[in-house]
Image (tube, rainbow, N blue to C red):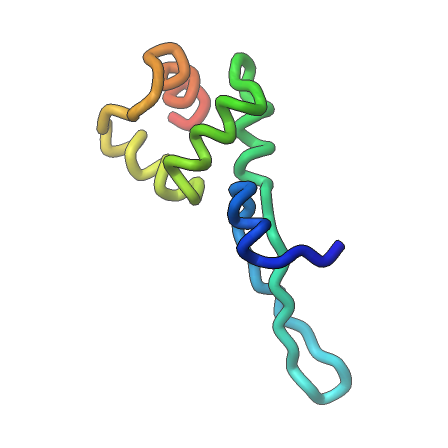
Length: 89
């Protein structure tokens, strides 16, 4: 499905570039990826809306992991922070 980039980003989807070839011409296709949000939703105790909140704070998984590994306090409820730390540490 084609979706304008700004609409996809408003739903916390991240643009991912796929590179391929058509004949001798190299092309780059951008798709929207919501795998980080789905991964968060798979953690026991984190639902759709909490995952959306986390993704709105940390756009990429790497940002969240950097704060967890740096032992920084996360701007989330204590129980959610504990679940994230248990899952990613």
